[in-house]
Image (cartoon, rainbow, N blue to C red):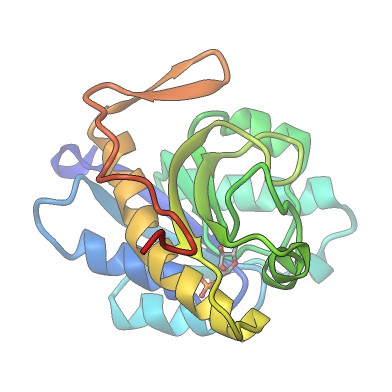
Length: 219
Ligand code: GRF
């Protein structure tokens, strides 16, 4: 490993604000991971520009050019390995990965999802949270398993739903926390501070931050 750092590949499909948060974290010389490659299945993903601006190599692997999911996933796998990647972060990657790919990268593949999993898996999470009337939602970084938005949870942030929120306002508030917890999760893993017991993660030196978030607030 170059400089002892975890060599990361990031898979994206779109604007890449979480990618940017990871890029910014990796810019700190003390951060224990380095992004070796950004792969997008969409040639017009804005995240590709973010990577290029940071001097990070990029690859476009268009899923429409492959006859099957397995063939597309094999191309992604090969590209990551050829770049020397040892750990993968999904950051707004809008393709479901096959069980084969997920097993190959087991415990070396993480995702960020804009809800407090296991609540609100899938798409349209913010509107569904509003429709359900929850007062607290949030975001989750988790290891990827074959089922969608499933797998051992690494870090979560709780975010309040506020009066008058629509999906966009809520999404923007959650996104701020996503940008905090994705680099945190990657750092904890790269520093060996997350260990698995069965299908749960345990922080080696873990203390939860602060107190509970209560919404509406008691006062
Ligand atoms: C984020 O909300 C992330 O949680 C979800 O997809 C969105 C990607 O946003 N998986 P960005 O491309 O990182 O800005």
